[in-house]
Length: 368
Ligand code: FES
Ligand SMILES: [Fe+2]
Image 1 (cartoon, helix red, strand yellow):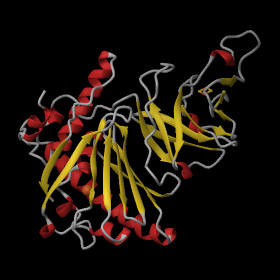
Image 2 (image 1 turned 90 degrees about the horizontal axis):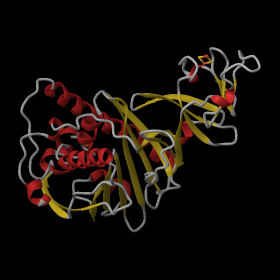
Image 3 (image 1 turned 90 degrees about the vertical axis):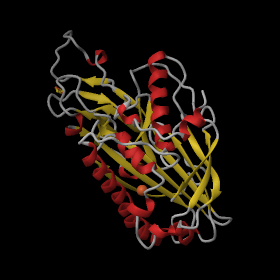
Image 4 (image 1 turned 180 degrees about the horizontal axis):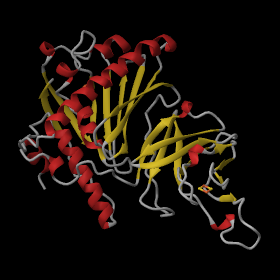
């Protein structure tokens, strides 16, 4: 199929009306929380894709995740206790190892059913990587599938600096397309440090599909950051080169570098429920003065994400009236790609085959 041509035509039926709106893709890694938020011997409740999840760290430093409902009567396990080794339910004291195996049912007499060995709480595959905790939200347990690689920033993996999170009251699709949109910067992030409306100029960016094995997504090839990326210039000095990759379900990784320094930003959207999305942004850098930079970057990043959140919420308000809307050439092409890839991922899952990346290398042009 001639994807490129199709992408270059304005499309007036938006993809979010074509059957993927808000679907929470399974069989994928989702960002749960920064690793530092999980002390040894602690366990916390999180909602991921509408499921209650208990995420903890054992006394010997292993991160685990269980469905946060007791297999006995459904009580939230997070309301019980965790001693660094086992979780005890607050209602009848059933105990669970961190792999979900039940280890004690205090009410049972000898010979009664069930015994602890008959019971398991549902567990999730988790990964602690580069300062982040990811949970694999699979389609079913014990599937024996080969897991996709855990999202990873290049070069700076051991330089985790900070994490900020903002909650968007919308489904994951609207959060993702709101963040990836290349044409809103001068309007939504209008401020002296970021962009000005009169700094808009024409851009041409080369894109390519992610190599096989790196997931379903695309990459904006390495290029010199545009002259209106003031923040980058101030931050890294000189004329940084950036490369941005996007991978389903929602991980955007940006790597900016000068001959001297590097910066990586990882942005990941995690559905809390079908209608609420947590946007996580993690920053890595190797510049000196990390503590002072964190003090500056924290509020800036939070403000930036909040500007995005407000822009998306304003769009959500309008979409309630079911207005006609469109995806234009080429500024909205990435939005269209996102929906196309998501449809492909869903179709491949339904048909039990590996997904095929429909994106072909192309240069996109827009003014921003
Ligand atoms: S509900 Fe958890 S032990 Fe009974
Ligand atoms: Fe933005």
